[in-house]
Image 1 (tube, helix red, strand yellow):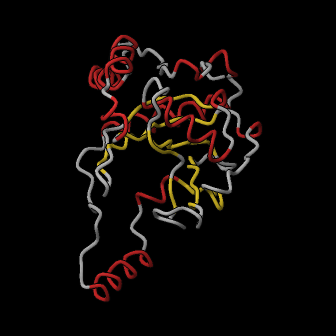
Image 2: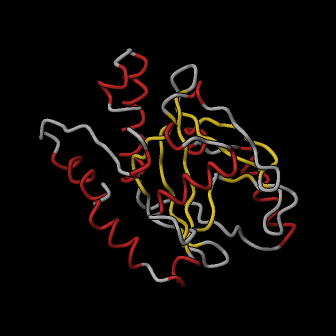
Length: 225
């Protein structure tokens, strides 16, 4: 599927798992709603809105991996920080999906045609009061992705196992505690997530696509491409 339309496609189940179907329906983008939002979001709202791309692909051992970047030291805000590809919404962006894909193209040269969007997660509010929407997408043909970094925005690109972010790392815990003591303040982030339902469904879809690709189902069978 071409990502120009920024629509999600989901395999239809047999109806036995009603709860899973309800979760799919609740987060599947409605084209009519997307069109209305694109035409009616006020200019001021767009200036305070951003999107990031959680770009997931299958690793050599079948694990899910996510693309990350290190922000350029030339940037005035958060230079050197590890980040997801993304940025502020432009007036020409149809929706949050379009913003995330455009920014990924500008930052790391990712072709939107290689990405299949599976879900938009609940938005986060940044420290400067931006509404940031995470867009989950699958990189369907990793071998076709030829990164081209925008040196004004990105110093480096790398990937990491997605499951790593669900594990409590001893080194990270030690450093967080040390920083809290030295700077005499608590972390600015929330260390607990209250609702995993959207992310769980998105990851389940990603895992199924990876399995289909490994089994040689091909683009026609898995609606990827």
